[in-house]
Length: 78
Image (tube, rainbow, N blue to C red; front, top):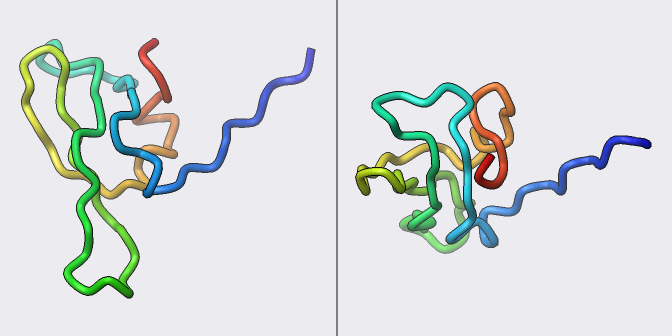
């Protein structure tokens, strides 16, 4: 059975998507994209998203392209 290729990520469709940290810290394993950070100028590209930990609602801001790195993030709650 062939492996299914992961769909390419789009920053505009990341809001409320679920992610699992490949190496959890402080019991923070599952995350939601709680906010897509819009740039100051509308013609600029979206660069950042805010992730919220399900465990304790701690937030962090990361570059949205980091979510494509499977050594750090896994898509969905695994």
